[in-house]
Amino acid sequence: MKFFKYQGTGNDFIMIDDREQTFNLRKDEIEVLCHRRFGIGADGLILLQNAEGYDFRMVYFNADGGEGSMCGNGGRCIVRFAHDLGVFENETTFIAVDGEHEASVSTDLVSLKMTDTTAVQIKDGLHFYDTGSPHVIKYIDNLDDLDVDGTGSAIRNSEFWTANGGTNVNFVEPLGEQKIKVRTYERGVEAETFSCGTGVTACVLDRFVVDACQSPIAIVTKGGELEVSFEVNADKSFTNIYLKGPAKRVFEGVLA
Image 1 (spheres, rainbow, N blue to C red):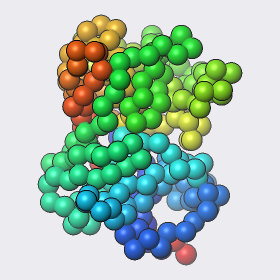
Image 2: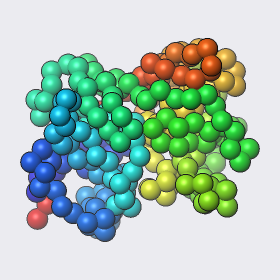
Image 3: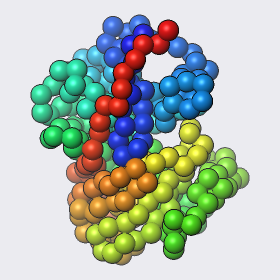
């Protein structure tokens, strides 16, 4: 089985063209492929499948082998993958677990329209957003010094979130009105990743809620820079949310 490796600001994924629907690996086999010592190494595995009425379907598996919720950087990477395969030229519409997405490709940049998001909710004392995946946000000074794995794991595995389906945890340091630094502890990976698309989206929306910061907002992650633009509805929900940043092929190979 042929595979491709893609990354978007350091968030890396195994891509498989499954338009003939021959993919049949088990959860434990996917987990091994994503392992950085015993497999290819990735934050997740993504299938590109046919979908009636759309250019393609995105099916996403977390690094633990379980099928996951929406992944923003994974969405941008599969758009690049589909573009490289010749599925579309410049603009595309595809379907994922959280619904329809539009996207476009320009040089090495991919712009992905994210799902509409309801107004901020307060859960277990933290701001919460569902941007296709669940995210809570905590503001931190001196973010570079934070133990993200330890602090993130404590929140993610707390009694509240264990009983309420789990969450991703984002730590934010403002760098001015129009720029933030973000580090994310991802469920499914159960560790910090270099970047998280749905996570930075949630953080940008929260900057509007907390400090009335306006669209667009730039984000610095460990893996590079992203940008999120948005519009706010009268009920404080969000629409026309776009996640923009680089997505690139790293290498390809064959699974023996």
